[in-house]
Image 1: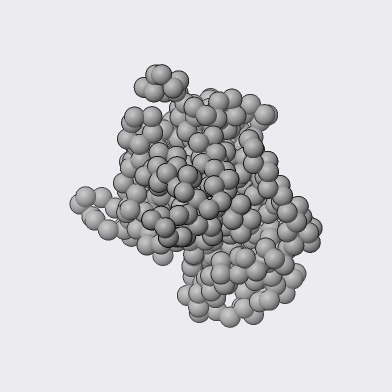
Image 2: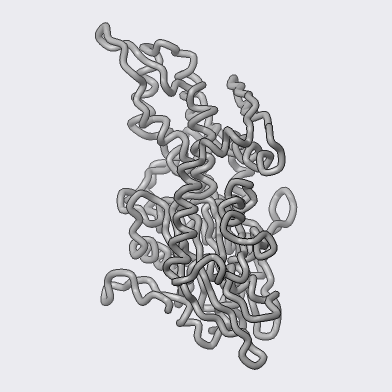
Length: 446
């Protein structure tokens, strides 16, 4: 490792965080001088802007600067978020943006280039080795983790890194949590991101002056905060934009295809709908719709690139429901105004399928470790969705309240990955991407 420090990268569905660690010191986060003030959470977003008459004269931005570019000119800016969701998808080969084709590794490489540029001097001496977080289970219906790591590898290599090691995100969070342990403990870590919910169980034991860690079990599921957003959009927004309505065709009344709304309610798909075949079909259906005003609102959201204001409205609702029992959802953009009170119990009923999957993954991690709930000494929950009362109840039903802690929503994984990079036996905790000589996912950490 060069430059005398370890670099941890938490490339998240919603935010990306960088941390550096040097021997004998605490990990420190990389700060970015963003337009709205310094931040350590670099939004995992991209913007592609070009004048309408010169589409090849594109300007690409990422993070807070992408949000700013979108705010300045939403009509002429392609704004992409949650693109990590595509990482392990064999179905996603490329997308076309402003007359140029982008594969996933192209999007990630561009994102990393802008991230490094905005980090400035903090990344001027980046080490050759980087520890990159990865979910236990990638998002998507049939994720291919080997493909995801191949894509990561290509993108990081284009940015000058020569050795990339990959570690499970909840294991990174566990290394962060272990700093505060004063006694031996078996720890269950739950990491709730935008696209995945991941769990690891690790035994920490003090040997001399050092803390020794032994991995015991893990599990994960490809649902988290974005899946909760999907339910909110599907129940609150899409019905006001034509979902469940009909159109006339050859003297018949037919339902508006649900596939439009399945894509619309997913942040990663919403960014691509504007130039899709479905968009052309939706425009054609407006004139034949039984309720054309509703379908016209859907066209307006897509044409006027209103996905980000919608994201903010949904996020505000989720955050408020973590505190209050009843919250007013409000989405106002262009000519569209949608407002309604939402009860927490109603929201929890919407996300019941995702909660069941999360609950099953927690039990699977304990089964993988061969442990019962009474053998877990500490539980550490991190990530934004861990603040949702219904998510916390999954753990309170299994573990005593005094054993459950939370925190480090933005720093835990990146800091833990950086600290992991200082370990003498770093290979025990990390894996490498597959290569042409060794196809398939490479050696798993023990």
